[in-house]
Image (cartoon, rainbow over all chains, first blue to last red):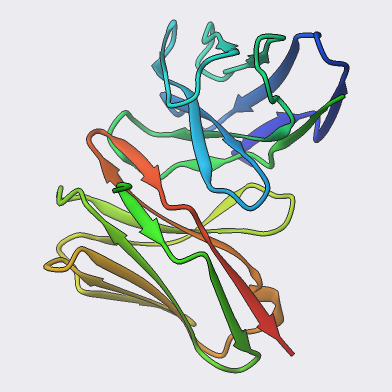
Length: 113
Length: 109
């Protein structure tokens, strides 16, 4: 079955530690995205990548970093510079860079204490 | 204002129809989407409509598009408790897909 996987489902970290969230897709999609969702809020775009080895900042990129070394994978690192990292993180992919429909993973809930 | 806007909350009784509304600003010819998010889960693509259509029906779901007013709506017929979720509309903003803030639908038994 094709789809997007995110791991782990729940992640706990101490303040000051970097943490990397995994996102993998086997849909052969070119574009991948990371969103942050806070309780009762909509989605905010962190980073996106339209092609391997290239990515662009979204609306709230500060304190985050990404890489896109493989088409299937788009990991997100939440660094210690992110002031309020506790949130629900969603990864998505789409066929191309135009506003095609995006397919979402199940999300990772990150709690930093 | 925001590229895509939605009302925050809707409460209906089981068996009634629900209508969730969305307004957008980009008038590009493209698809507009409705997603559903259940608690603690990712977004699930529910349905979509192309901008040259006025209406699309898919079982209990009806999407209406008013291009003149840039208004999109999702009607859920015979709403069930399992329809309780957050519903997001999504539309174009330049060459990106942008999401509304989500409408929380609560279905009372």
